[in-house]
Image (tube, rainbow, N blue to C red):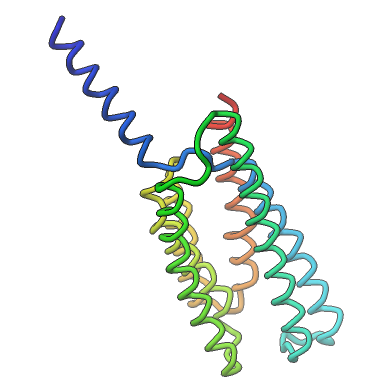
Length: 202
């Protein structure tokens, strides 16, 4: 009996150590809203391109800059929403929003994301637009996988999904837009819903 209690104590200590090394205040609702923002942004970009490209898929400079602005706004709204909801969850649970673990999470997330963003800007400056959607998915997926060891919720699986979708988009550039919608929109809503019901409703 004492042996079982001893093993249980070890297991409990291990769980506490694991939780203390992971950021537990990520909000599932923020994932749902991020996916919703992405779908709204994709709809706006689709309308813009179809309205002003005169039935072609070629984007002139002004249209492309407008699409990039829409994507930037989607990213901004998603980041702000994620911060606000995560801060609210941290306050509710009595956890720290900004500590050594959350700093490591942010750093490990931003390194692939910034590197990928700079690479995409470089190829865009050369007029190569076709791989943009796929590259966004790939580098975003790598950022999620890289940061997953500092967070609960197994976000690495979302990262793996984004990477796979990105690779498919590079093979099938004609479907890049719809794969982007699937990755940043639909998958975020699905994953955010899972996280919300698994962690936020307890």
